[in-house]
Length: 311
Image (cartoon, rainbow, N blue to C red; front, side, top):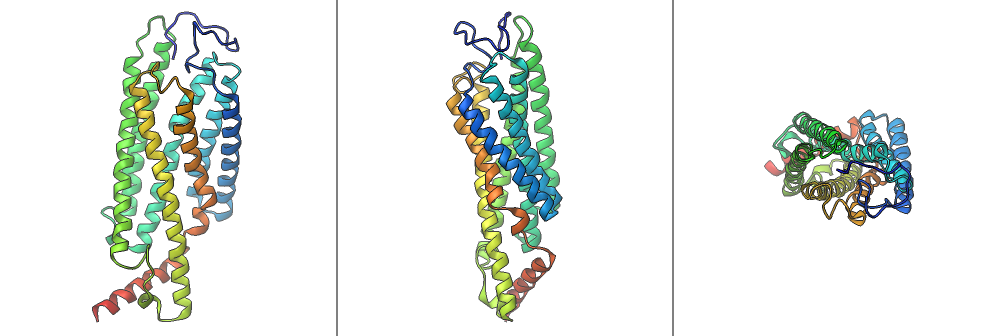
């Protein structure tokens, strides 16, 4: 954000005495690459949603669309770095979009808990969805309000950016803490299934020895879920690291070293979000999550194992 009284025309050439809000000229090459990546990801997620008819997957498509719009704005800014419109579009969409991926991940964990039983988690599937989606909504609201305050202050002579910036930081930290807590709870689900010696991380032959068909079905279902948990872990880690970066970035202020150095933004925001987005393109939850019949078969297999253990 600029706190000077005069701004050059939107598409003026670089003026070292009056840098744009970014503190640099955004890279055209980076913009083109990320527009292509997020454009492909949006198309893929939308197609996966329609084909699988798991309509909650639209959350991933919306998140990818937000990233796409943000990087289109940054590509625009590579030629018009002084455009306040391009700056506002990219900063708002690139801050808000990760929340849609987080919501999708909450739903994936809910499916896993439903399949392997409530005993694997301290919270129910519905509680995960309501608690963490509410937190995401509150954090986004704080970020939106803070961004609006900072934007308004930046357009005024000698405007004070601190109140708006601090509000944005509060929203980002709130979201980051929630993601860390969620990651811990999700890890506990995986650990509990592992400690059971069956289920998500290991197929117990005793549980599925009733018939070859049952054994094959349970092993296939478990293998798919193992792959999905791995992908979810990668995506969640990318979101958490990105959240840490954005928190430190804003704590340094609008003219801090991180926010005015583009390579950090490309590596710790753009690249990490590309990993989070593309992970679920290649590891499609709509294809890997079992349908009702498969869930029932796997749960019955676990019950059989429990019965064998008690004998």
